[in-house]
Image (cartoon, rainbow, N blue to C red; front, side, top):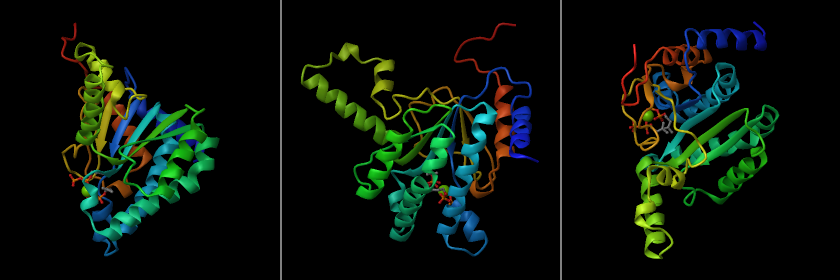
Length: 253
Ligand code: IPE
Ligand code: IPE
Ligand code: MG
């Protein structure tokens, strides 16, 4: 099938019975290590394959009605892994930005990062700042990558900054509202996710978008991230369309 034909077929699957599309999809891309280990390969091979999957998912997302895609690439807890794995992951992130920059710009994708950048190496930080600036004019798809991200760390940083403002007399405690807290998080420019998908069969959030997912729907799939396909994403997005979201209220008959 042609790329365009594939896109149309995916859109048909995604929109089946859909009342409201999943505009913001957040993904916990898990299972790279197991995918490689099952084949007797080093874990980094799984991470490289995982990065290839990200490219495919980014390419198909707009066809599925997705306008915001936020992916978890490295958590604040992932520093516990071996130096080899951590260094390897950082170089995969750098290579992804270098190699994908032209394509992202050509496809109208705006790329952002969330998480604490201060401990990342300067070369990676320069690449991150550069691609954010270069793709800032685009909005066909908003791709956000979480690197050294943790929901608790993000809230801690925001609370410290607000406490400093209160102490300096710049912020009144009564001015701290739900909306103000949202605006102080790394995700200030993003809407809350509608749908969170975790691959690899684990059914936990692992510190992802704790504040932002208050009313998100969750989908867990046993598929390991390197095997996750645009077709499976289309099915999950279609299921989301059939869910009844109540936001604490009562749905009238
Ligand atoms: C997810 O895959 C990617 C990162 C956390 C960086 P894992 O590396 O966690 O893969 P498993 O869970 O060990 O299979
Ligand atoms: C969550 O996966 C983080 C990312 C996908 C980047 P982990 O594999 O690190 O999570 P746990 O350790 O299973 O909770
Ligand atoms: Mg894992």
